[in-house]
Length: 253
Image (cartoon, rainbow, N blue to C red; front, side, top):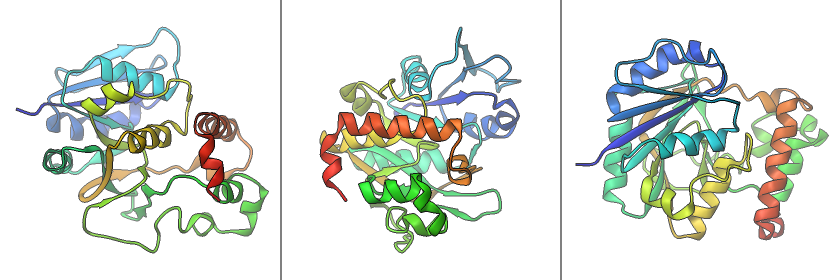
């Protein structure tokens, strides 16, 4: 019988966990929550394991720690501010079971008010990155500056293969994670999901967007709202690491 593990990394997200964990716990066979800083986890559902860090770690390192602490054939990696519909995980698992080379399956995401979140994306390009992460962004509305990157003109109600999906809520096949060595812990925050999907693609693992699975997500878009913040610098560091690892992407304009 397929077993599914849930891993949630919380960095000050105790308030969000009050809603997200009760929705996720009944859908997985084991649940691990990483407490990255003290006070990040409050009351949790029965049989949930909480792993407290001695010192804060980056998201990728925390994800790897949680994955290593579980045994499921699949791992749901979820942000504290995501709330899956009651059948979301089962829908993703059924799809992945039917597609043996599916290494990553992602749901349709909507915001708090039900607005669509563009979670299905193309691998980054030089032009798209410059428009999104430099003062050039001031001349483009937030989504329009990345219209093709976000697949905004390609709405679908059917499963489709894609380059990568937001790591806020994804189903990961453990066999793929074992083959790839998990996330690259050198990414502190931002870029680790793109890197994992890129390495998966190069290794022949498919990434599928499965819109029948629905997840609500409080998409904060913090790096889109302000041009220069600490998180923007983390994002640029993630971009730099991705380019160093995969310089061939510089040829993609």
